[in-house]
Length: 451
Ligand SMILES: NC(=O)c1ccc[n+]([C@@H]2O[C@H](COP(=O)([O-])OP(=O)(O)OC[C@H]3O[C@@H](n4cnc5c(N)ncnc54)[C@H](O)[C@@H]3O)[C@@H](O)[C@H]2O)c1
Image 1 (spheres, rainbow, N blue to C red):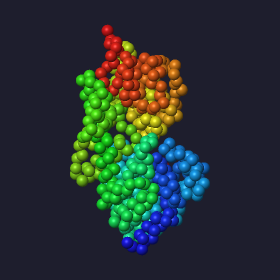
Image 2: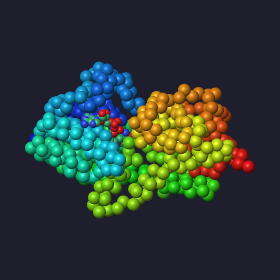
Image 3: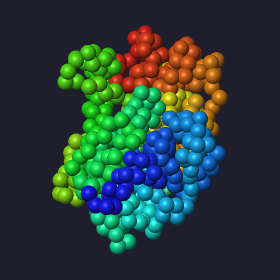
Image 4: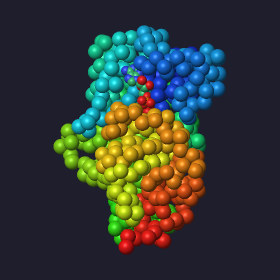
């Protein structure tokens, strides 16, 4: 091992290394907190002043990170935050957790990674370890990050160390959090993977070293493509079941009893979040550059992308039984976050469902305990919508209630008792009722068909 690598390894083992995290969002803040808990002096860097202020005041703004933890680390001198990349001069390691969205054309938007890496490069110094964590296409670390850092004249693997380690955070999951989800690590060289594994090993229980950064990048895309494709499959099954008058939810529950060779995925109103709707397209973009046409990804994207339209068709079908049209109906969307019990609305299918209903002339309200406002820039309606103060006793005011996100705190009993019509896209309402229309299931028993 080179002298630089040996020095860094010793600093990591003794916790004398100064660690840094760039991008303090859903991924970066939990990681910074874990490094702080592991005993490192950790500095978070973000462009967002509000996040820096919150950390400086000892406050968390991510539901999975507890404020007392942030406060204890602040008070103990283990965590600070800044917008100034000048701090990189003092750091031994830096983890990059900035966003990787898709452009409208479904091409990867590398601008956040490029900007963060350029800012790090200005202060890069010999002996540093740089780990990219943002989800991205295979080749990003050696094709994009390495040249930007080597433009400083320092050489990766010799003067500084470079690795890729995909983040697998599952927001809102109380069982699996940053510290107990195995961490896949790929390095540019054997020293790079050893150093990155040593760093992560201080804070995370299980480390899974792989042979290259490209393998590590592909691992993450396989995981998320696996989900996207299986969700696509079960969504197609839901559309099929709807036509064949079979309850897809009952089918999945029964299939799930097979103790081997089956894994349950559930249909829904469409994909949401920062990963599953986006990451497979990073892979298909890169595969196409190699002349390979990835058909599963495109097909799943097509089926999953069509689900909000199917939900709206279901609303039309339900209203039709009451001789009503979407145009002019008052519709309540229950849940706009992309999944249960979290506050993240990125790519949420609820935004598409709201937009489609609005475009067809419905008056659309929403209720969500986690989301106080849907800003105009976030949905196709293009105007701000504030959360409605809808409680028990109010559900009868709507022509139809569409359960898009099955938050645990919703009063489903009151909804079923009061609402005229319900379209349930999540199987949130378990007992059949004549006013409940389920995605991927026969029309409700007892529902009066039009004469
Ligand atoms: N959220 C998840 O569940 C999840 C899970 C696994 C992987 N990921 C991946 O992790 C990465 C980060 O996702 P996230 O959900 O934490 O995003 P996020 O939007 O919550 O946080 C990103 C942060 O980076 C900051 N930022 C942007 N550009 C910057 C720059 N140049 N310098 C410094 N800070 C900058 C933003 O202000 C923001 O605070 C993405 O690639 C995502 O695909 C996310």
